[in-house]
Length: 57
Image (cartoon, rainbow, N blue to C red; front, side, top):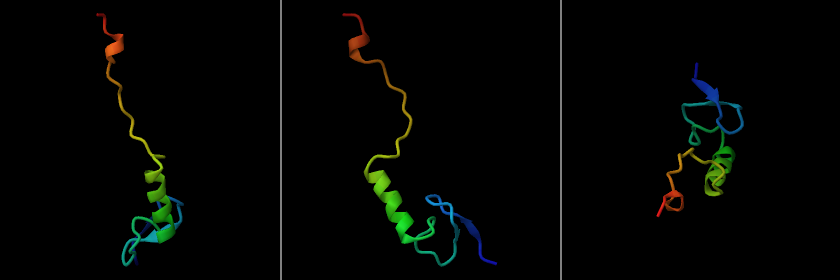
């Protein structure tokens, strides 16, 4: 029985073996996800450091 998992983009069941688009279910989901990265829709949380404007002179 082939291993299956949910597509990270659409949630549809996808197979791992013989899937050139893995971890996605299709090239369509793969390209949609790539476009989201290119548009900077995904952001990693960061902690802002104190700016020089906040420091006393």
